[in-house]
Amino acid sequence: MHRGYQNITPANNKVLKKLWDDTRYNQHRTNILFAEGRIDNRAPKTYMHLHLKLKKLQMEEERLATVERDNRILLHKMSHVMRTKGTVDNHIDNKYIHKSLNKIKRQRELEKIAWENKAINKRIKAQTTRYCKDVWLDEWEVNERYLANICTFPQFWSDRLHKHDKPFFKALNAEAGLRLGQSDKQYKKEIKFLTLQKHKNKVQRVREKNIRVENANREKRVALELDFIKKMKSLSLNKFDNLYGSKNGPDGKKKKHSATLFPAINAL
Image (cartoon, rainbow, N blue to C red; front, side, top):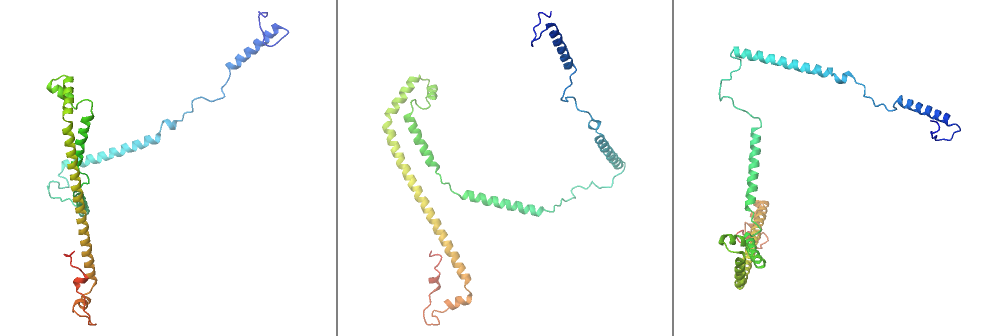
């Protein structure tokens, strides 16, 4: 056996070399067999106070005892009421009037909110739209005409085929011939429609301009009226008599009339 042994390191005697290698290997296997880990991977130590929570059990028992005591008191009261007539007269109907300390305040707040909502609704309804629905409809009709002129197939051809029970090529030829025959009429209709549209837009602009001028005049009249009222309040009755009571002043010159100083409201 020692002759077939192949030693790793050189040696003079293969028998002794094999014996020494076997001894080292056996010692190595023994060390591995009885080796201890350097990392402690054992389960942690258990403590009884973490598993058996006595304080929690005590609190639960106290709660159950409190509930049991309240139940006994309630049962005793109910039995007393059942045996006797009781100490509360609950047979009077519709005699108790509910009273609230902040009822008036809540009513005022609700009235204020209702008034504000009504004012907002009034302002919203008083506003006029800046967009003309008729103009949009007319423009959409023009776009539909343009679309019908540039499309390859006639519009809604499938519905017409199903309704009249015609082949596709017959419906297509009929639609193409109709479009060619009505091209001049369609052009004239579009020119007429655009002319009417321009006239409508012009009338709408004139109406809006008149409304703006009327609003500006109304605001001007209101401002002049307020200015006149402020001036009249600032003048006392004596000063007014001294200024406008007599036709001539103390210097003999003719005074100006109040109408010249403060123009009439109707004249504005």
